[in-house]
Image (cartoon, rainbow, N blue to C red):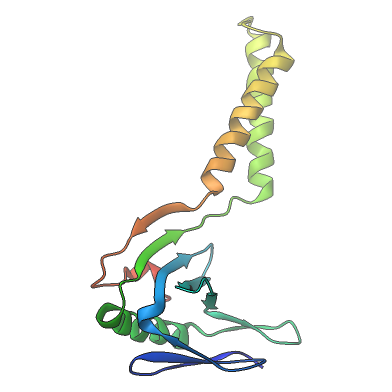
Length: 168
């Protein structure tokens, strides 16, 4: 069974496996809205006692089937944001996570090795071609690794949710 969250006037009630939890809006310290590749959105919040909760627009059933709950997720985020604006001093951040497919990473590395050998073929020699290739591959992997980090992190104005962080 999925966890159910009921938004009330001063708090939210989290009903799930085990005991129910009441979380007061005033105890929420951070909120992070995340847009992942495709149509996957999530909201993560943490409380003063260091408990963290993540809510997504996707629900994975016990059979493995994934249901899109974008409408309910959008409504939840909007109503929670309304409560937090009035009753919390939570820091709200938004981030876009991008994903570069493995074949594109491999293609970048192969292209850079190819450039290294082309330079050698044309007679442009600064180092041995293998060193060129290794250096260019290392640079490519560094660029890819840095681009995979939490890209486009921005603080959100407390008065609005940027549209790109909610499903359409």
